[in-house]
Length: 67
Image 1: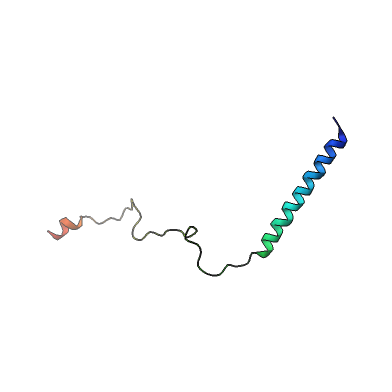
Image 2: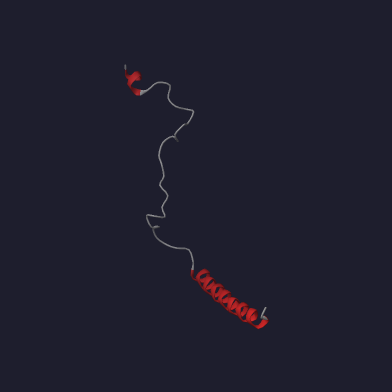
């Protein structure tokens, strides 16, 4: 085992980690509350009405109730 080689590799890795931390800190500082409408891919589709399988369904279908 070459200790000097291990030390140089660890120092390089530490530099890379420091750069990554700095870039993430810059991103975190730059983010504030966003304004405006979110993009379409981010918007969650909302369904209307009862959820499927709900227990409080009507007793008779509409076709039988009209008759």
